[in-house]
Amino acid sequence: MSELDLNLDASRARQQRLWKALAASELDAIIVTQIEHIQYLIGPRFAWVHQPAAILFADGTATLIAPNEAPDAAAADEILTYEAQWLCTLRNDQRQASSAVLLDYLKSRGKLSKIGVEFSTFSQHMSQQLDATLIDVEPTLYQLRRKKDADELARLKKAISGTARMYEVARDMIRPGVSELNVFNALQAAAVKEYGEMLTGTGNDYACGAKGGPPRDRLTQDGELYILDLGPAFRGYFADNCRTIAVNGKPTDEQQQTWEIVMQTFDHVQKTVRPGKSCKELFNEVVEILSAAPIGVFDHHLGHGIGLFPHEAPHLNSCWDDLFAEGDVFTVEPGIYDEKLRFGMRLENDYLVTADGVELLSDFPIGLT
Image 1 (cartoon, rainbow, N blue to C red):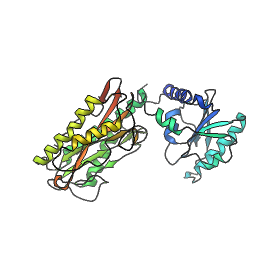
Image 2: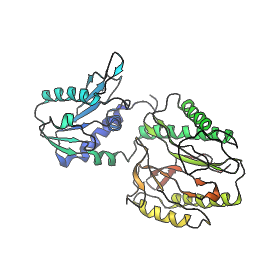
Image 3: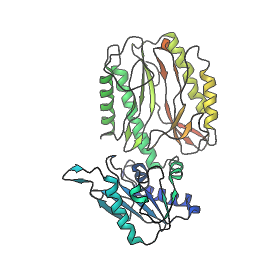
Image 4: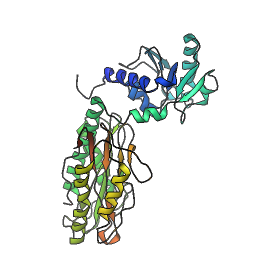
């Protein structure tokens, strides 16, 4: 079995960790409806147009409610289906249809007094018909998702390999007069070829001579810096790293000096980040490093976790006070912006927190040329 294949043992282990983390709540069952959490716990990834559900029982068994037909494999003891489309037309009442199957099934399981659910998304189709106390398990799920298992790391590393290939293509094609839309199309194609399959998500910034934004019907100009912040997803897991490329291949002295200051951030991360390090403290330390730049401002977060969602914990941000923990996969994206730099630069690497430091996951060229 390839390390990228569905690992049902890993899914079962995540189910057990969830129950252990929630032991004090004395739940009879847990219902999850977000496709990310279903993938995390059960294995299969469903399209955003569908509304599957899964229920985990305190006895360790699990049941999946899948659209149309049962997937080939799932970490579930029973798989039921709902009709997600009629004569190939998607129904608009996906959640209602899925909930009807789940509620009918629950009648056969006897009385459930206390059920864990995701409060932010749990549907009234179910909540109004469940005679049970509902407990929010969403914060626990997000906390558990921070520590990446081996199967998750394999997919994250594959996602990041897609960005490495995208930047190779970008460096070959970027020059004055290139269309931003052509750059976008070429880079998407490069990631698809690297993965050998369609992307399950994409992003982020493809606008040249700007801080960020989607690609425009616009040509690159001599002297500009092209910030490419790329976040393709492989089988649900998102990469996110950024490189800045001098359009004419010849950065100015100011641009190069600014790059050297931004690069100091990564040396600092390698030297200081360990389990238990304060993310807010790191943010403030980097603000001090970047304040040495003679021009330009740094005015956004320093980074964030990545996984089944583009932004997860830990938050490298003064608005949170997270602590780094072993198993976190996170980004560091310092930037400095000023019109004199046309328009500035952002550099971003991906890291895994280990027991005694960090491992760089995006080890490919980071220079302006």
